[in-house]
Length: 285
Image 1 (tube, rainbow, N blue to C red):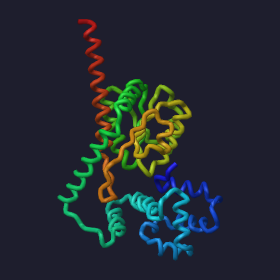
Image 2 (cartoon, helix red, strand yellow; image 1 turned 120 degrees about the vertical axis):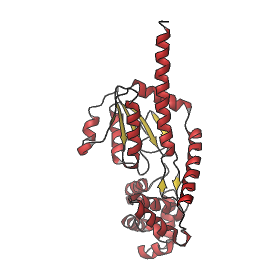
Image 3 (cartoon, helix red, strand yellow; image 1 turned 30 degrees about the vertical axis):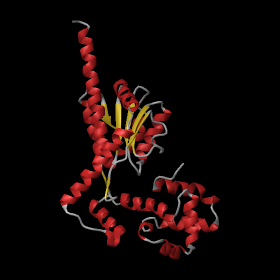
Image 4 (cartoon, one colour; image 1 turned 45 degrees about the vertical axis):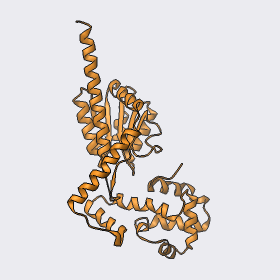
C-alpha cells in the first residue's frame, strides 16, 4: 500500500523499525523526533544534523516507496501545515516554506485563485462520482432507521449541514459528536438498521476511524466522504465518495466539492420522496 499521509508514514516506520539497518534506524529516529522542522531544511542540513550521509536518507525514502527524499518531504510539509490550525500561523508557515518565492496577493487575486481551483475541483467531481455510488447512497439513507453523521475539525460544518438537510427531509439524522468522549459508547447503541455517514479528510480523525471500525464489527451500514481511495475509512464502507478538493496556495483546502455532493444527495432524496408520493396518489385517481 502506498504511503499517502504523514500519519501513515509514521505508522509504517514504527511497524518496520526493527527490520531497518542500524543506519536507517538512526534516520528514522531523527525524522520522527524532528518532524516539525524537516519541511524547512535541505537534505544536506538534515544529513548534517542527523549525522548520517545524504545517501542514507535517500535510501530510507526509497525503502518506504518514495522516488527520492523530496517526495517523502512533501508529507512532512503537509503535516506541518495541518498541525498549524490557526490560519494566520498557517500562512506564516507557508511563507517560510516558499522563502523568496512567496508573493503577497491582493484580495481580488485570492478570490481568483479560489474561484479557479474550486471550478476545477467541481469539474473533477462530475468525473469521480458514479451514478451507481449516488443511487446506492440514496438507497442506504432512505432505508436507515437512524443516520449518525460523523465530522470533526474542518468537516464539522459539512456534517452539520448534512444533518440539517436530512432532518428537513423527514430522516432521523443526528450528529455523532462523542460529547464527553462517549462516542464509543454511543456506537454500541447503534444497530444494523442504522447508518453511519462519516466525512473525514487527511489527516483522518481517530474518532472517525474508530467509529467506522466499530460500526463494521456491528454490521452497521456506512457511507464515507474522504480524499483517498485506500485508507482506514474506506476499508469497510458500503459507499465511498472520494473527492479531491481544491488546495489554495497549498495551505487552505476548500470544501466546495464536498458541499456540492451533500446538496446533490439531499435534493435527489427529496425528489425521490416526491415521486413516490405522486405514485401513491395516482393509485387512488
